[in-house]
Image 1 (cartoon, helix red, strand yellow):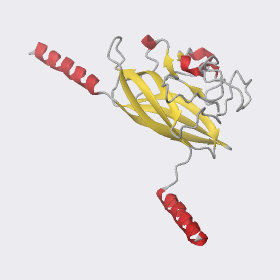
Image 2 (cartoon, rainbow, N blue to C red):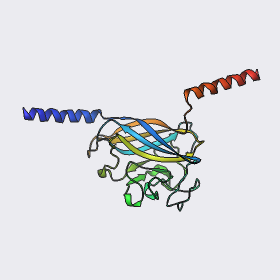
Image 3 (tube, rainbow, N blue to C red):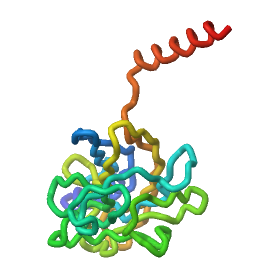
Image 4 (tube, one colour):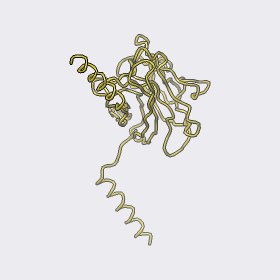
Length: 224
């Protein structure tokens, strides 16, 4: 009987692992003067889901290079800049810095040992560039955990993994698409993929959208 119970528990664990999936992205927004800081999380429903890489990030309006990000890191000398900087999480100067960076979980700063790296799709500049290559067609630019055994990309207690922090003007607005690859955190386990969009910027409330529509209608009537 004990063996049957253990076998049933093991089978239940396998089924739960197989059913664990990516659900969506969520964004936590913090105002910082004229800037907004957006922390983007991947959300999963498996207790051991572990992100391996994120890729094919691009602006849904197909505008090319994704620009306008503020960096404030070791490459900029700790000065906020929109013309230089890096996406490397190890170059973040202090916890909570108003800086744009990418990651597959893990901490920030040189002491964190964050093992996130950019793939060749970033071009010769690698992570050391201000914008993001918008490579929707090629689908190659992304970032990954270069040391998967450290399970740096495993979900936290809330089922989330931090995938990046983006700092933009508070007036900026963009909808980005991104894919993620993940497994159940066991070496050699099957890799699954999830995808979706997330918004960086204010989303008008339904009432505001209705008012905008009425304003447009009034404008057309006046022109008529």
